[in-house]
Image (tube, rainbow, N blue to C red; front, side, top):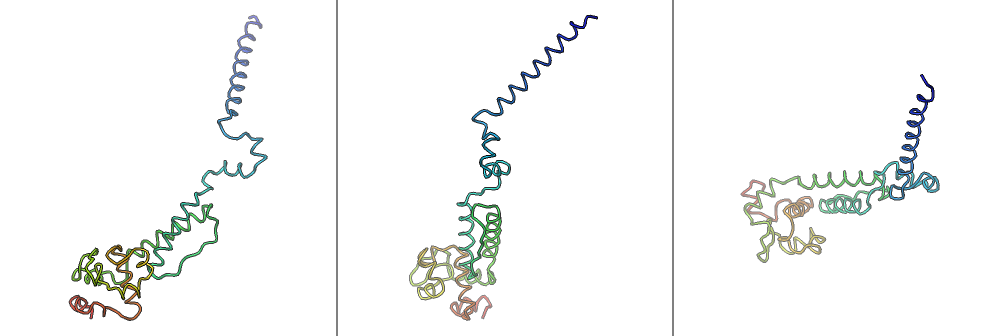
Length: 193
């Protein structure tokens, strides 16, 4: 067998393989494909971000979660939570998403919910706007000014509040020592007095 006939096809395969590798290497360093390793060495922050794209969090999302948690905490009369983590990090995102979810769940379950729903059934609709009483628990102006000044400024009379907001304002009155006395007849019919 002639050795030249054997070496010629092997040499052709090696040349084709080398050309393929060179083409692939050149294609991976195209400008639209991201920063090159030389650029990553000059800017280490870019290298970290490229290794872990989930590291950066949109701070607007974290602010939205934080304000939701603070809103529910203010409604329930709970002291606002604090976090010293950066708004750009995953840690702050995790913390505020858990806080917002937990506060929303707590707000959805007022302590005397059944009592407030019973009073509501006998008082009026949640959007009742008849003067001098508003909302499903028939709150008057003095009651709203005393127990919900922020909601009154932010949303207007009780007929514009959600049912949960109305129940939590009534809960504030209940906790202050008034109990169910602002609703004497309906509380009596519900068996609360």
